[in-house]
Image (cartoon, rainbow, N blue to C red; front, side, top):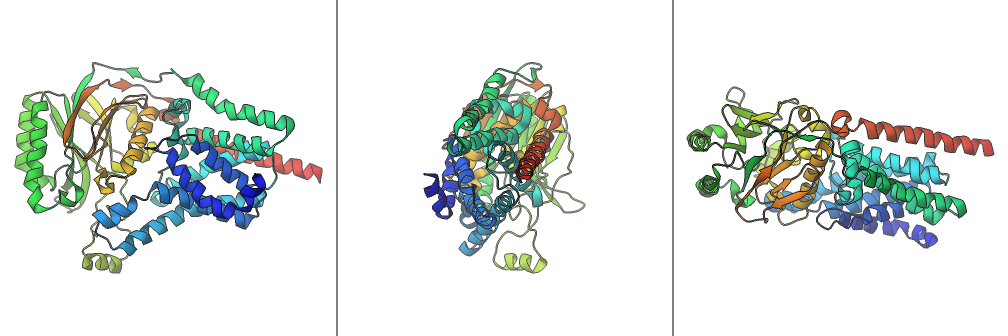
Length: 500
């Protein structure tokens, strides 16, 4: 079996990576998150550095092609870019992300060729997590499809408040390495590998029921408005007034809710062009005891810079501005001549400006809201500072860019992980789904159907206190991984040197 797997490994790496995408939402076949990486480790066994690099590249390419195919929809179908531009951007992104895995495959084969439990269960899993983390921030980063997101409904989810999503990825890879060891090892070593395969799950069970944060104050009533305006219609002049009327009409019956949440860029205009509309909304909501929190674009009158923001219409007008922008979606890191070509092709080419790196929580209805916009919530470490004061989390997004694909469900899983890591409930407002209320332990308690206008109502319990992850961030798991790599690789090389 192993000989067959290794013989055909070049042909199997890509489909195995693609199958791994089924471990993520909405399919949630979580055992694949262990079995598919275990198969890659088996294919790496004894492979020459160049071949190991090829296997790592094609495995990751399969994962990201199957897992992020929806980029084509956002670039070509919604963004109206030519097909070749959509394919070029997808190919470039997948190639870069796969290149990290190729380098990892090369170096592990070049510097750590010897078999054994230290290689399979210690060094290779730790290296995998370092690569996941690195691709999540380097050159803006793309932290999508980290293995930890596959375990939201398994005992390993209880590790999130301690070590975050990358900590779960480490435990998943330890299990994958143990599976590879069970296949490759013999005798007593196989028995040890079996024990090591079980240990991560025992750790998850041990943390079950451990609560790291505390309730504070009374529950808060909320109403989340989902306009479900199709993205291709959202910014048309003919649709503008209908959208304004739609959000007003959906909101009015819920004016007594303490917090009313609208999604990202809910209204199709800049804030200064909607002053009368916003003043009337503020008057009626405030008179009923409600605060409206909405995603809205706004422009600095002095500099002309445009921001993707969240506006809170409470006692004071407060803004949060998006800090982590989407390359080629919200800003265009290209030379002037490329920007001119985009303009000639009638393609988006105007930059949105990033907000300040440090922004306080929004004071709303007696609560402190830790806000993220769109895929900002994929960067868990960005929220650590605001968690020291936030009692509730909010994410507003517009996943209409991705149509009826897996993207909104994957994004919902990311939001669930942020709630788990922080020990805070999270209100999620999406233009056409998935709009949801998520508890402090990452459970979805209610949600709206996708692509239908509606209002999700419910009660959330504010919380305070810091989880271990909120105190330390990713440093705990990264330091652990680096120590495992250094100690494990050193022990392997020392043992080999003694035999010589």
